[in-house]
Image 1 (tube, rainbow, N blue to C red):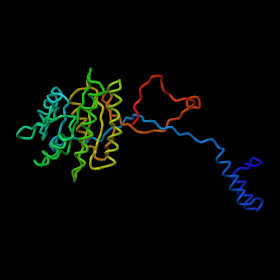
Image 2: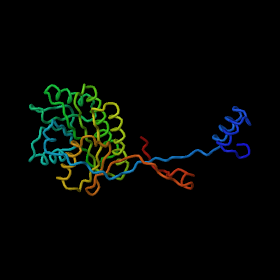
Image 3: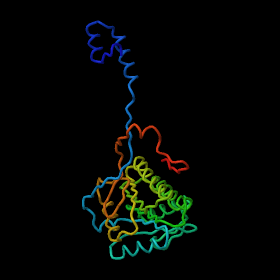
Image 4: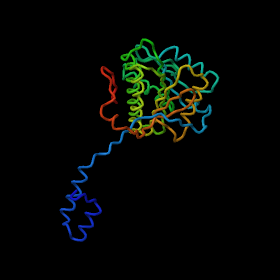
Length: 276
């Protein structure tokens, strides 16, 4: 700006007719364009957040649907619920859609969108559209990304499609429960949190949450954590994890970055990155 005049001085000169308004506004615009743009960096952070204690055993009495990715997971959940009153149906993976006579156990092909639709249609015919859905995917030593896609991400996607095609009148809570992993499989599972946020924007009645849980934690604590999330009222964070028994939620926060840190991107040569 001419003579190092600041904005207030330019406005004052315009007011005193020492400078035309056109020249003054031009000088202000040029000065603003020459200023370095302020960079604000945002990154996700995990913050501790306690839930108000509202959970009770009545949460298990709601129409409940549990997806178990193996017979081991299925039996574990049946054992957990054995001493609690519950109205649960169970889903495991198989070759094609099958159901028992009571509609309490279903087997379906995780790669078949039609099987997921048949499941929802069958529950609707019985008047048992679930109010609570638990999708439990456990860690595997030799699973790989392809298996994680076919047995986790894609079935979740097709399940949400089938649910959103229905006219949901009451809130349906979908909790994706997964165990942490340090490889690309862990990145893939963590990305489901972003998917959960998208689903919630498209249909607010479908409250989708992704919860990371450490397998070595005590099982009664897991039941209590799921129960509390479902009964938490308006505290439904999309991404949750429990670390040493402490509940944390993922939020976006402003991140101060020094000049030296902004000169280059923090990328590793031959690194693998998942963009969501």
